[in-house]
Length: 369
Image (cartoon, rainbow, N blue to C red; front, side, top):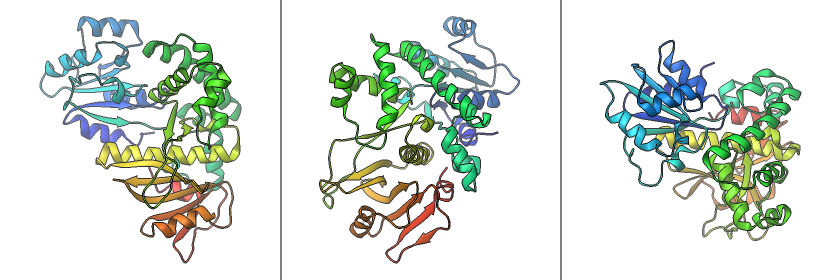
């Protein structure tokens, strides 16, 4: 199965290095190895022999070098700069990592202008070609990471998620960050899926875990950098008396979320973020994913924004017959923006006289990426 970014990676490698980032086990290595093929060229920082060869500068002579997880070396930017500037004519370099390379590249970026940055996301309705509600239910239950989804077993998917969380806390965090209390960090990882769908209160979490607000804030940032979670900020303009600070959070592995309605909302959030990142990384668009909540308590799950202008308001419901009042209110406030009610168990798409669409989840999400 060829992943949705494979062609873009090939095209970008013709011009610059490519940084391909995304969560652990999302398929980056599969993309890299498919591009390298049977030739030498794939090297992983996590393999001792490859790490030694990289540090000694003993690299295979290959048209494409695919270097995995080298951002775990403190001097990885200097290493890459030397490889890029000293490469033979026409040699391509692909760098993959399970942490936010856009974050770890900061601090005097010696690679500026030498790379394209792409983010690989889990499998989605559009990528899988899902066209019916039964297949969609499987994706909602198993999550979008290739191994548990393709395995097809709910029990094995739960086991995979548990092992994934342990490896993330005990290996990836340890390799990239200084965290003295990994036990409490893992407790935070267990608590967060229960809080999906509501604004995330760091104060409440600090009291729950009996640690400082600063520690909890730092731990959530670490989980973001490792693509375990992502946060969605509120959207506000002069036309909306919106809340300003409270952010919502979601998981790239939505199968972790226990409550069905929150899990569906998380799945929609992950699909929308995948589309946003694709537009940012491949088209250069300044689009963002946000949500709406005003001081009067009206809330809509998501809004796609470009350059401060709302493109579409999206509400996600397990089942619904008509659009909620908050969605109708925002459609009236911003008549040029689309307004869509996405329903998990929906049937035929409909459209109201005021322009609000109701679409089944597999149909709407299949129009993304």
